[in-house]
Image (cartoon, rainbow, N blue to C red; front, side, top):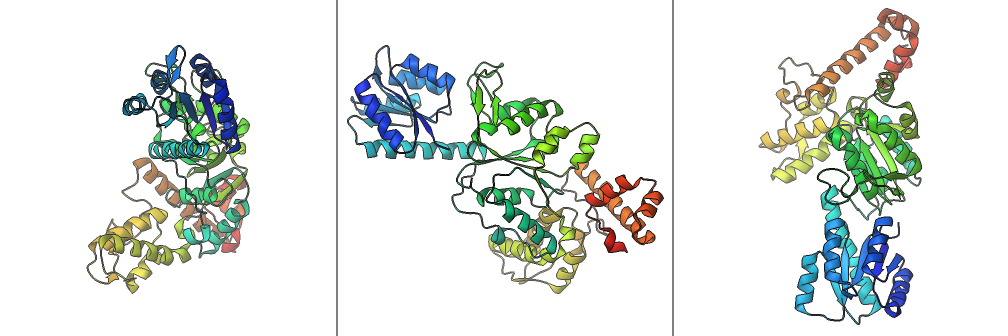
Length: 460
């Protein structure tokens, strides 16, 4: 996306050639010959930077900058002055200017300062909003372990959509790596040089959700002393990753649907429509079909998100990847802890392959890190108490590190999967017989099988 700059100077003979120079450098330009005109343009359009003269009729650039900083705290400003002094520079920076230029100046000097000011501003935004601007292409094959057939199929899906701008819906259990895959799609695609804004929908209080996502205008509610850009706006030109999309409040879903569909929205308390160019990637650990049936998720929003669905398999369905992942984590934490560990013990190799990994890749990483911290030799041993904290020798379907609600869902999911598998074994893979034994109709039984990745052919 091209950046838009507002030039403010009362001297038309200076304003026009300056605008032409900035346009030729690939920026969009707006001009104003007075402070009132500049204020009007800022209220009716979106700008990424203001370049203003210091001395103008009716007010001065420093006072203008100070008021801009109060009303638009995220908007960077460069001041131009023919009256350069240390005092002017100090006053400009105190007022909120990012830098200043002494007239006369060379066009290249001005363009260099504009780019530098924007880069500094972008870094500050990145720190505040966790925006990542990785300029290097994300090599999916080198970052995501895909030894198993399930992950090779996922890799093929990802590589098919990398050059496209398609909306993607990632589904899978907690800890399977949906966030990593979303980053892979962004950095491997055409928007890799734009921002990737990540928002965990489960972590935002319902009362703050709309303002976080869409921003608000100054004075729109008590405490809104300045306007604020929302995460949707900050993702302009890049990707918005909506993690745990199933947690979006039902009342806000129509506005989210409209923003995704139209690529435009209105801030809280605002009156002007804001256009954005954003790619959407969403992720969920819930069954959105079940959420729709329960009235907690809108069907039209689901269809808008489900353009290209990708299921991320749990670790128990991709056991060929476990030794490779374990080796990666072993080396990472051995280096971090300064330990001489070079390999996994044979007993531990067998243990990690038979364990069910209810916490998926995240649990594997945590257990390897804890084992590395304990280990004193060159061979990493994973004690049974790390895998079987109950002391029974049987894998628990949950981890004590999970929230209660998630742990409870794991227990239910583990029971349902094993129950369905047992019925299919007893029926010899006959769907109707298995569903009848469970007291369910074929459709619901099939949906459960699909949810847990169970294939009939495996039981015939």
